[in-house]
Amino acid sequence: MSAPAAGAEPPILIAGAGVAGLTLALMLGRAGRPVTVIEKRTRVEEIGAGIQLSPNASRVLLSLGLGQALARAAGEPERLVVRRGIGAGRLTEMKLGRTMRDRFGAPYYVVHRGDLQTILLDAVRSLPQVRLVFGRGVVSADTEGDEAVVSVDAGAGPETHRGSALVGADGLWSRVAHAIGDHSEAEFSGYVAWRGLVPVDKAPPAFHKQETGLWLGPNAHVVHYPLRGGKLVNVVAVISDSNSEPGWSRPGDPALFQRRFRGWSPELKALFEAVGEWQVWSLFDRAPRERWVSGRVGLIGDAAHPLLPFLAQGGACAIEDAAILSARIAATPDDLPAALRAFETIRRPRAAALQNAGRANGRIYHMPEPLALARDFVMRRMGGEGLMNRYAWLYEWTPTA
Image 1 (tube, helix red, strand yellow):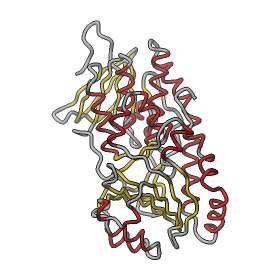
Image 2 (tube, one colour; image 1 turned 90 degrees about the vertical axis):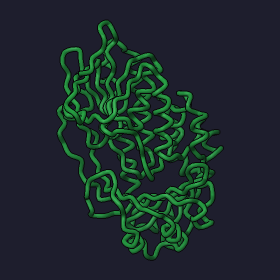
Image 3 (cartoon, helix red, strand yellow; image 1 turned 180 degrees about the vertical axis):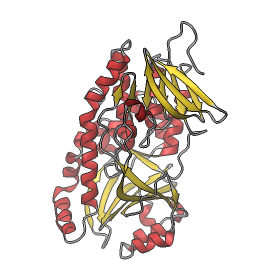
Image 4 (spheres, helix red, strand yellow; image 1 turned 60 degrees about the vertical axis):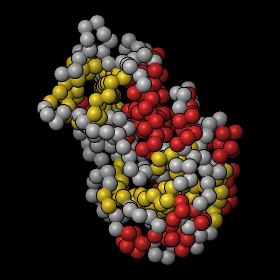
């Protein structure tokens, strides 16, 4: 059993050491709050996955003093280029790089998810207020009086952890959600993501540029961008599919993938051929839970409101959540249930807007012909400046907004 020493302030418990959980732990620890992070994995790692950190997220991380670490690990593409997957016609181009910094006051980064989590984990480990407990999966949780109580499976036997509150940052399949009375299951979205990495010296020359590419086609789209100082090209293809196999990843069959993209741009297919190993995820989704808070237990990130990858805001939204929740805890440090309720009130409208915008993009990106012709016409007319204006509500967000 884990309990605070006599006279010590009880910790805030965080279930999950992903981007949401580590960012929250860092913020709370920096504010002097004791924190215990409980993670079911034995170590934090992400293989073969990039993440985009738009200005709404990067400004939060910079405020935490992570600028130098991010500058070493992350890249700043100069532009986003949108093309047709079949025919490779250019639809529009939106400036990133310096333009994003000038307009929104923070960079638009792309970074390997494992590198981001390492940066966050190193920062958290430097804080004596934060305790990290790995290899413990949440079994059950509840509020008992002025405590949150969590039972975990420690492998060798059960453990109980007690704290002043419990924050479930344990993802789409959250076990902490059961403590707020939500036992609903996520539903298959109809999309499957294929992810791979290509060493830049093995990628076709067209993909050596410091830019993000978005290719749109019938029932599929592809995103690619440089990682690790331009040494790697991150490739993500999302396909409308009926394969609803759950799980974080599984190996993908390159031959099956190539057949799926028969008829697409030859240069894009050459990039696919350079991918050494595909990892496949069936994407599951849910509407925002009816409630995110019960007593001293609350949910953040995908545990509360998962985002499909059509807006590149999953990680950013998790960072936003952490910023707002830590601010509400600082505002009412002696009333954590009130802080959790205020967090939900503030975040619910934006989370719903992000989910709706992402789902709309999915329909737009995957339009079949002839609807795609109308989409292409609109995107060309909108231009890069119009596209940036369309997403300004995302990028201009600040923790006080």
